Amino acid sequence: MLRLHYAPDNASLIVRLWLEELGLDYRTVLVDRRAQGQKAPAYLALNPRGLIPVLETEDGPIFETAAVLLWLSDRHPGRAPAPDAAQRGAFLSWLFAVSNGLHAELRRLFYPGLYGDEAAQVAALQGQIGGLLDQLEALAGRSQDWFGANIPGPLDVYVAALLRWCALYPVGGTDWFSLGGRPHLAALARRVEARPAALRAAAAEGLGPTPFSAPRYADPPEGSAT
Image 1 (tube, rainbow, N blue to C red):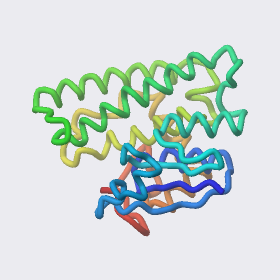
Image 2: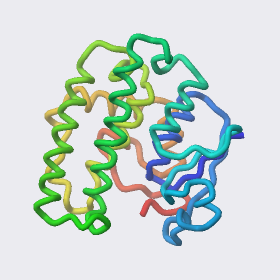
Image 3: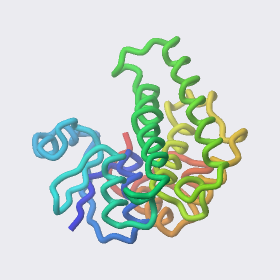
């Protein structure tokens, strides 16, 4: 049995979305962020980095969002380029650009106190993130079946969640972000949130009816997003 250790509207949302898209049977284990549950010894035994999520599998615990998405996609093929596919290299390049670039830089933007970032560094981060989003906008406008297609892949659900957080965080500091000039990403967000998988995930985590195209702050039935 797959067990997803999650907190509402955290990076675990991306994994939940993909589990739902793949139609897999899984259970959730709530991590109490207010009590710093991700730093508890039992959790650190699963993920020594103390970050959310962790997916417990028959092969042991897997952490890091991109690693979990890739493991699931390879175990349940058909929704991402296979290891021997010609598009595999491009898919992996962008998956890790989103993970190591966009996602990591958003974390710095949302939690500047953790990284000692000053106002000038925050402004530079916003510019870097905006540049990455523009590159993804261009990528989504190309003809390929692994990003921006009618049926979402793992990279689509990853980017949709990051677009959500760009619009919401840090609270009171999102004026730099807009989907208005990025029609391909806006369409991607609408496609993902219309999927039955996203509707189930949104209901489970209290995300509202348009969690990616016009998001609102989570009102989860259990746990805390912050």
